[in-house]
Image 1 (cartoon, rainbow, N blue to C red):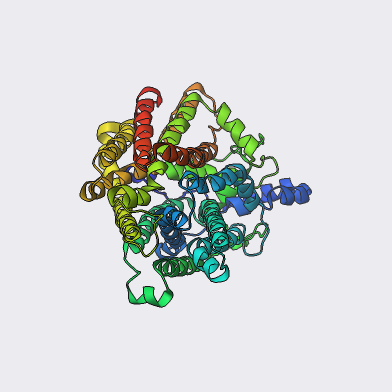
Image 2: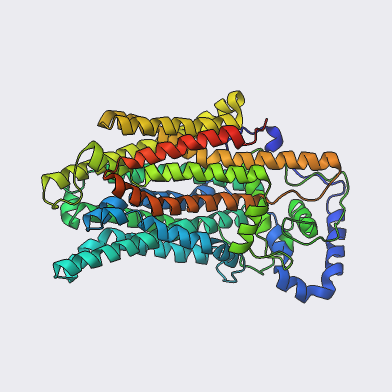
Length: 567
């Protein structure tokens, strides 16, 4: 999502060459002559630099929207999981002290394996492309996970007759479904973004990310809206058996349709398949010539000089995500000299990064810990604290019906959060010129911390629903401001290098973005390991909002003291 406003300089300008065709033909001839003697090594190391540096054709708005529909489906299913995972686990008999552990397994796997799987997709040789096989496999795992999550109890009840065994197997199957879904849903975002970068030009990447962000917000809103409906007494609820089966029907249908649309939205070129000569436009030819210049993570090579009259084919964008993605995509090029990203190399990069980047990672960790404390258990908080229901009561009792009603109203609150997040992302543009990035960062944490404090102090229906809007302020802040700060830090570094006469490439923004992603998973590990124990010690779910408020206000203090200010 683009936060900073774009001016004319940030828009792609036509590339003008002094003698169209002549310089390109001569340079391409020189390029082929220089590398004709080492073609085998060249192909094995990079599988044709043309693949990675060819400027893809301009994509239509319809194609980009179809490509982004997968984010609608993913966020729809994510919303269903966030709203119902705790009520479902408690309803099958999972002890209160263990219910947060379900969030612990998937982020540990992601924290360890995500760099490895991301690197493997860079080298996939499937004729269907590098990214789509991974997206399809992870999409199937998501569908299987949500099937077990929402239908596990009903399936086990139909198969197992012994009551004690039925409870144990229901917990095992539902937990396995949640972990499988969460694992696949977390991992699929990387290949989806890489797929977008591979098939789109630089300008279309930003347009595509805008549609991704928009459809993500809409998907979350519709997912929470479906969860807020009382399907148990409807015709479709009676037909399918229960409320959970109705929600599963909508989730599975939405995900299957939008995943299919996404996979066939834009053709993906397989690794190693060189494009035809007719596809070499002036802009793509310049990228071809520049492919042997130094990139982040590669060894030094002999630069190829271009005429001074040739402008930079990739104009600077003032969008933070666009700037990050430009470097990330270049860092993903399968070049022999480039090291594959592993967990060890990622940790080494985080440890050795400049101090202000590390401070940004710490503040991001505090923010996500606060946000996840509240979001993952909010519907349970509504059912138990606000509505005073009991998830452990018999399913045909009034106490359990009251709890379910609280969960439904909690879904409405999360729907308000999704809508307010989308609206606040546009309000940020106007606030930026008055309080700056650090001010926006501080304000997002402060508003969330105060809002969750008030929810804990006054847990009534109206006040809680109104204050759900502050969740959206925090969500939009976490998804945009840290990446904008990284882009600004990098811009300052580039300017300082120019003043010193140092023309080496700046730090790799892709590594910094990967570090921020790891903070999200680490926050989920902290919440999963600690929050259940805190709830058990306190004997009340109100500790959820207290923990969220405390972590958010600590983040405010940290931002004020340690986050580097940028103009």
